[in-house]
Every structure is written in C-alpha cells, then in structure tokens.
Image (tube, rainbow over all chains, first blue to last red; front, side, top):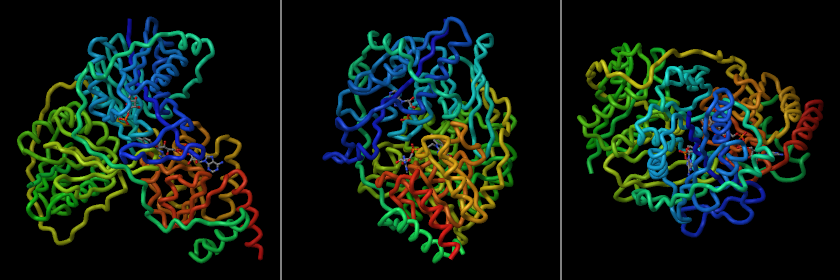
Length: 261
Length: 327
Ligand SMILES: Cc1cc2nc3c(=O)[nH]c(=O)nc-3n(C[C@H](O)[C@H](O)[C@H](O)COP(=O)(O)OP(=O)(O)OC[C@H]3O[C@@H](n4cnc5c(N)ncnc54)[C@H](O)[C@@H]3O)c2cc1C
Ligand SMILES: Nc1ncnc2c1ncn2[C@@H]1O[C@H](COP(=O)(O)O)[C@@H](O)[C@H]1O
C-alpha cells in the first residue's frame, strides 16, 4: 500500500464583510463570528493531486493533517469531504503562534511514526505567506524535496517520482526524487474538486486523530513580531463622487500625466 | 556585534539573476558600514567570468563553487555544499533572493544549520539589540515586523523590494574558485525545459489593463478586453489565478512567476495586491487600481485608487472615455 500525507491549513478570509484588524496585543489579527475561515487555496491543489494519484494507482491511502487550534479541524474535514481517507489534527493552544519551524517539527514527529511514501503541502499559506513549512518538514524527515511543483508523475516501480518545478521565465526544472519524498504543490497543477455530498457526510461522522502539540515538543519563542498596517508607496489618491465623476476624473488625470492624448 | 553576512548569488543561462543584486542591497542595509564583512557566494558551472563580474560590481570577495552535475541546481547538493561552506566561514547572516530556487533550498538549509529563516523579506530595520525584518502577510493587508534572536539567520528577500545593488566606488574583491564534485543525491536532475516563450505583447505595451479574481466569472473578462480597446498600444494581462483557471493565457500573467512589466500605465482591476503580483508591476510609471474593498493591498502601491465594483464601473469608464475622446 502507498501512503500519502497532505498538509492542509485553515486560513481566515478578510474582505468587505470581515475587515482585517490587528488585535490588542499587536501580534495577531482579530477573528470573530464575521470572519470566514477556509482551506488555504494552495492546499486544495495538494489534496486534489493526492486524489488524482489515488485514482491512477490501486491501494493508496491518503491522510490529511493540520496544525492549529480547535477550529482548524475544519480544513481536515474539508479535505475528507474531497475524498481523503483519514484526518489528523495536531491541536495547539489558541495563543500559540504557528511559526513555520515549529509547525514543521510537530508534523515531522507525527509523520515519523507513519511512514508515508509521499508528502504533499501547498506552495504557500495565504495568511503567513512564507513557503517554509514544506521544505522544513522535508529537512526534519531527511526527505528529498521539490517546491512549486506544477506536474508530477509517480513511478512506483522505480520507487521514485518525477516532478516538474515551475521556475522563472516559462521554464520548468524536471527532477526525479527517490521516494519517500515531499512536494510542495503550486496552483494550476489541476482543478481542485468540490467536496461531494457523500464524502461530506462521511467526514462529518469520521473521528479525527487528535494529538496535542504540547505532547510533541515545547514551543520555541525566539521570534518577536509586531503587526502594522502597510504604508503607501505612492500617492494613493482616492477618487470620490459618482461612478461617472470618478471616470471623468480618471480621464483628466491620465491626460495630465500625458498617458492618453 | 560584528556580523558576517554571506550573499548567495544565482545564475541562469550564464547570467546573474537580477534579484541577487537586491539580496546584496539587503545585506548592505543589514551591515554596519566597514566593520561588518560581506562575502559573496556563487554556485554553478563555468563560473569564472560570472564570479569576476560579481566581485567587480559587488566590490567584495567571491567564493565560487563549481558544483558539477551538468550545471544543474540540485537542492540536496546545494544544502550540503552550503552547510559545509558556512560552517567553515562562520557566518551570522545569509541573504539570498526569493526566486523559485532560493525558496526551494533556503528553509531546509536553515533547519539543517539550526538557523532562523525569514522569507518574503521586504525591508530591514534596527530593533535595538537585534535586527528586524519586514514582510507582508494576509495577502499584503498587514505588515509583520519580526526580530529574531538566533546565532544565524537566513534572509530571503522578496524580488523587487530592495534596489539592485550598485556602487561605482567599490573596490574589486578577490575570487576564490573552488570545485565540489559532490556526493550522490536523492534528487536526480533530468532537464530544464521551456514550456512557454516569453511574450512580447506585455513588454511592448505602454498601457496594461490587468484582471484579477475579482472578475469572478469568465464572461466578465469581456469587460477587460473592451477596456483595453479604449487605449492605444495597450494589452490585457492578469493575475495568476485567472491563468490557472484557463481564463487567460500564462503569457498574460504578471508577477514573480509571470512577466515583470513596467508600462506607462498599469490599470489593476479586481486584483488584491499579493506580494507575488506586486513584484511584477511595481515599477510601472503610473498605477491605477479598481477594487471593491477599500482595504485592498493594491491601493498601497497605486497612484490612483478607485473603490468601485468593477462590473459596473468598467462599463462607465468605457462610456465616459469614449464620450470625452469625441469632444
Ligand atoms: C510561488 C508563488 C508565485 C506566485 N506568482 C504569482 C504571479 O506571478 N502573479 C500573480 O498574480 N500571483 C502569483 N501568485 C499568487 C499570489 O500569491 C495571489 O494568490 C494572487 O496574486 C491573487 O490574485 P488576485 O489578486 O487576482 O486574487 P484575490 O487575492 O482573490 O483578489 C481578488 C480581489 O478582487 C476584489 N474584488 C472582488 N470582487 C470585486 C468586484 N466586483 N469589483 C472590484 N473588485 C473586486 C477583492 O476585493 C480582492 O481584492 C504566486 C504565489 C506563489 C506562492
Ligand atoms: N498549521 C499548518 N497545518 C498544516 N499544514 C500547514 C500549516 N501551516 C503550513 N502548512 C503547510 O505548509 C504549506 C506552506 O505554508 P507556509 O510555510 O506557512 O507558507 C501550506 O500550504 C500547508 O500545506
């Protein structure tokens, strides 16, 4: 049997309805009943890729894992709704910051006991935007790793996977990695499916494997962070008035700048 | 504290990747004038001329390591060569550019060396007894200021955020050319293949109108095409998600993994302003953004901000512009 792990993260979506605000400690953002949470978009591609592998090879088991507080389990449930077989939740305390190195270490401790053949992560989390957990996890597990993977083909007969990494300028870096290996999945590799009703029902009933982060290792706190709202790099003149007035102003501004005749 | 910073340069097809010069600027900003040392590092194949170029333009000593392996970048080998080198050199900071290659090996290198690692670094500051780093989170709606207490920090810069290094006064450094035949790797390089030619359409356009996920439906893209026809010498571009969906061609994608553009006018419609997109268009002459969310990050990079629903506003712009043109 081949075992695949997909790491998924629950992220908040801040938009018109749920404006982003920094909390009183200055180290986090406020989330409340207005905040919509969803699975990190890049992780949807990773889940889909695992499901596609399962479809083309027999005897594949896919597990999804998340690290986070209570609510984070929704991302695992979503993955199960898409068709993942088993869910694992490394439960952190609400106040634990999720530092990349720490998250990767926690996952590695759990993964060591499970002997996965392939581990998939997203290329980046939309909230932290670091692209670190995947390659760090690979390092903790001493696995070969390829990031920004835009195409992959397993070759179980060779115990390897051929991966194409997207690099700059329309090029791809084509590699063969010995299994077990870790790939971080870039958007565009596939079209992630929506959860199916039957899988969602199954996911609802399924019991997640819950592991307390504290039982794995102690939190590091070498990093001090303070959040701020971004400054402006340009004039950022905000137009006002009706739509038509704004369009007229824009026309005049572009004329003044000699951008249009 | 005396810092010793290593800057890892990257080359592709015999040329230095431009963001490497930005990583050097970051290293210079971190350093304390003359007391701190900056060592330049280059890995790859046939490095002599490139190493010479870096030592001249960078004004510092270069260690260039021929890695064999057909000149291919290989993360497993790079991590082991660099770990050996940095143990020998005793560095406190490592700077490199957040290219797809830098992002591929830097986090693993940091873990291997027990170092802290920061990616997407857009600025540095003095945080008292430590150095501080600035990066964007939450799609650019928040900036994070971090300071790290670690004997070694790996700093990966966001392309386009630091100025490319240039200093005409700097003295030329020395070049130390080495070779590392390397060990077997669990990763085998097969080839570098080109899947897409760079399109000249975006490079030649003086006005680029660009669409993002705010368009929601493929049909809505007619709006951006019509808007484009209002201007002469214009082209239609977009953010990555629209290309992933197949609504636009990948040759139309602007950003770190798409085209880097600098038209006279960049008109961003329904684009949130994630760092990866901003890197590709921040050098445009004039930037106008249309977004329904007044807090959209794109507005922080814009000359003119228009808070409107693009589905109704773009038709108004087209109509108004046609009317005013006719006068
Ligand atoms: C390694 C890597 C490389 C990447 N390279 C690139 C790249 O080259 N180029 C790139 O673009 N991205 C790239 N990305 C992706 C990037 O991180 C963002 O995910 C992407 O840029 C977001 O695209 P968007 O702004 O169109 O979508 P979103 O972030 O979803 O933003 C949509 C915006 O539309 C607005 N909106 C919604 N409805 C309306 C309406 N009716 N009227 C007006 N506005 C509306 C919303 O307020 C929002 O601001 C990369 C990511 C990674 C990890
Ligand atoms: N808290 C988490 N739980 C599970 N997976 C995570 C977590 N954080 C990051 N990841 C995985 O690592 C990828 C990169 O995240 P990041 O390093 O935060 O940009 C994500 O796409 C996820 O697949």
